[in-house]
Length: 191
Image (cartoon, rainbow, N blue to C red):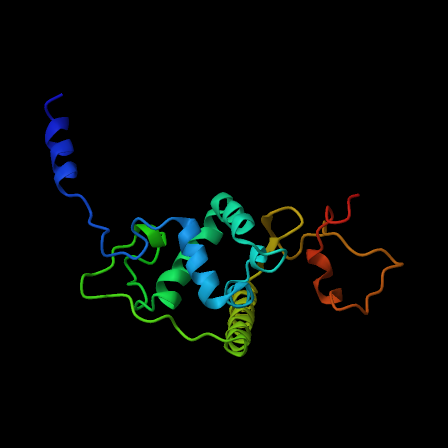
């Protein structure tokens, strides 16, 4: 196959150089040990909100969880790059890549770890909650066009659909979730 050889030759010569990345050659165990020694499990949980840093925290159990859970591992690696190594935030082109696949420009070098506190983590959490509430409010506003997502069946339906699940008479309608009664999951209490 003569057409395939030039393609292979080009890809072999255009190797990406990850040597500038602080994650290059760094094992997950060493990465986690570094950030735990510097910040501790309490700060890691406050900033990352990953339960392996709260419930019986330990290096071995955290590594076991992070190796099985890609999203959590990427979250920890991003924390390492942008908080512990204080690199500038990633460009929009590289944002969708996992932290290990990102290319760090040669002019960016790791700096001193960011000073983090539990108070700052609480403020950040408050900002995230407010932003999520704003996003949800915006989504609800946009969905008022007569179509809604029917959480009970997992598909879109008209608001005129009469096949939604309601609370029984003995359940209180005064509760906080009374406004969301049409979105109640019928399988949530199946046991």
